[in-house]
Amino acid sequence: MDTEALRNNVSNAIRFWEPMRLVYNVVLVAIVLFYFFRGFPASRQSASFDGFLFLLLLVVLANVAYCCAYVVDMFVQLSAYRDFWRKNRWILFVIGLLIAAILTRFWSMAMFATPTP
Image (tube, rainbow, N blue to C red; front, side, top):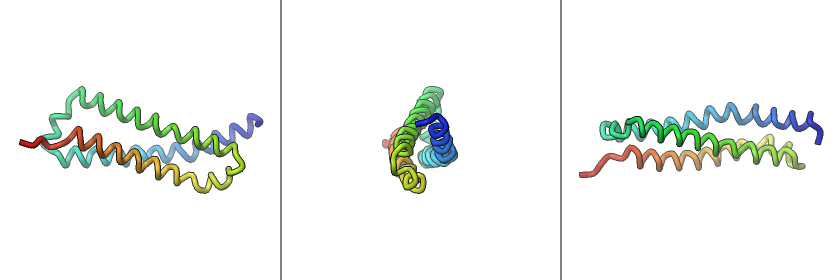
């Protein structure tokens, strides 16, 4: 494969996935905020410096996981299914977003749970 074709595939992947990263992060932040305010005022106990660092670590890990889509995208773009893939790769985004949302929900529920007496 020539470098021009590879460059075009990489550019195409970036044009698709990077704007979608914003949607991905906004949805995950909305889930965290929902569970934080749902558990308020007890959730304020989690609002410590260590809690912030833990959330920051989870944000980084969520975005590293998001980057796995690039591996799949580049692999399929190099195949004979390239045109079909470019029209339907949003399905991978939706599946990944649903998995990330489920994981975020469980982490948020655990972090901001209302203590029971």
